[in-house]
Image (cartoon, rainbow, N blue to C red; front, side):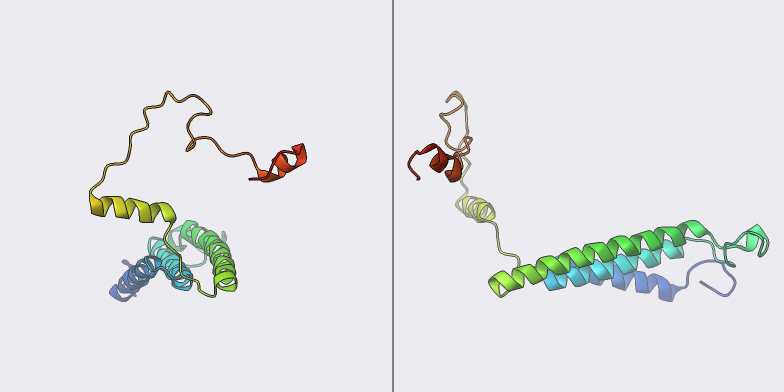
Length: 160
């Protein structure tokens, strides 16, 4: 805040812009480690932005001074809540990144099989086939889930 309490300084506004900008850029990467860093930077930038929206002043404790000179406690409470949420999300993403690294040796998010098929169709300028229906409940192999193998084995049927 400025010395007169009129509003945020340009340095703090630039800090918010840099934190949010770098966070968004890192979120768009394919590496889970960079996504984690992007979430943390974005969370810190948003927290700083919320704090900049509050009124500057003294501690918001009743009886310590006039109410007009107290800071707004709502942005502080929101930032504390956002810090806890960001920490929980960061812990979850860290666990996912570690699990991905442990299983595959890499923390890069691979393309989904359906995404690759859609890209191939778009390159060939194909239109997906239209499902007109009318096959009945068991006639459409795309819509019927196969029975799990364990149930078939318990009943004595052949395994696929």
